Image (tube, rainbow, N blue to C red; front, side, top):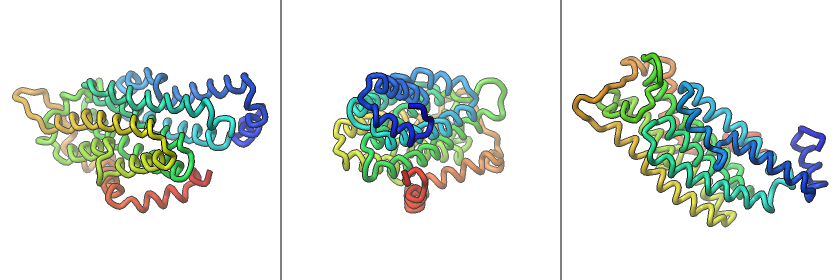
Length: 303
């Protein structure tokens, strides 16, 4: 195309969109962006990297990196006529369905919280592809709302792992058994993680519900029934492993190994931010109007 700007790229691709070389180039871009977003079948690196990286680094990869790349994919899809419609729509639909089902099904048997969140993120960006493919009406607004709620809840979930790991040397406290009975030792920290899990599951009165509602509304508006079917099935499967994490927080076994956050975790900067995120996730689930107004005024919607 001879250009790196989205508008120049779009004009060049529109002029020679039927060329086999251009179609191959668009396919290669889709693979590259799919890898960055860990969409199936380019997702294999995600759980290993999330587990191996320190929790703050994994948080950065799960939020900032993915949101930036999805914004690139959205702009490319909307500003370049050659990249929307036709075979690319079918390819994105297959990738979305595969990401939703594979991400949720592989998360079912995870006993490591960071790996579970890694597979969960694969499914969440599969949900986002539904709004991208709809690409009209509520779609862009749905993407903005969902990205905000996803970032909020992911920060909260990884924030709890960071606080649980901070007093210790070596590996992070990310094994699920290390959270058994946490409610009886750190009830407020347990409440934060519970709100994050409910929000990731899309339960009403949490921010995650608002994001998922908008994605479903955009899919209904564009009559993407197969994608909506996959989204509903995936959400039902996801509910199981999110509830499994929550149940673990309240289980007590005699002689179990105890792993705790610092006693004064709520008085530290990270702890105060975590509490603020939990309150915000609940507040936006009850009263989402400020978030909707923010998204409508953002540059993403202006596209």
